[in-house]
Length: 244
Image (tube, rainbow, N blue to C red; front, side, top):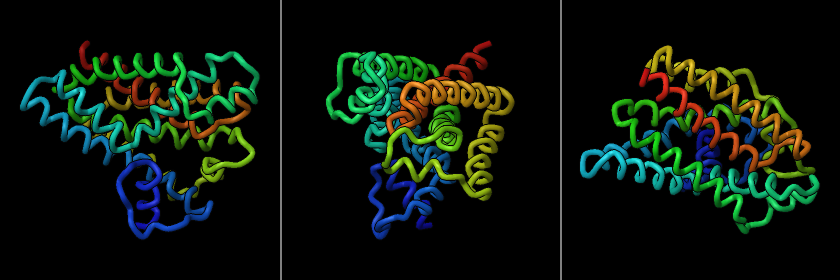
């Protein structure tokens, strides 16, 4: 329960009393709970989505999902997405790009990237009222993408909180993370969901590999950018498959 509490306090704005300071080993152990936290985030978001559908329209419901997601995560992953595009758009040296990602200010490229991402997500959410399980599960798949990225690529800074996440996970953590994401996807979305999961994770790993080469490893912002892209691709692939 302490590990789950740490994962919730790390990935969400939900207040978690009595968590306290965590060692690198304890932080690494939270990786196994990332998809579960994503599933909880998806349930909260989709609850507000349902309210929006009942009271107004799927378009309003889509906004409520996005607002809920930004609120419950503190826009953690969206911030990483913007920072990554500001850095890449600068076309500067590796050290300068790493410095840009630490800058709290958002540039024009990062803001544009966020608008395009949110706009596409809004469009997908607006047509997903008949496949509610998709938007519940998507955040869990995004967090699983982050888990894979932490284990597949090195950390890009000399020190930082994300460094603890790159240490090898315990086997039990792997089983739990994969079990939550894969079993839930197959149970509710069947084969189309499994296809969307596999494609989105492959795209996420390719994106993570690109970022790792650019920055000499991944950073916390990279993990946020991976999460956002995996979520997006999962929705794109699944909803495209459903409409056929």
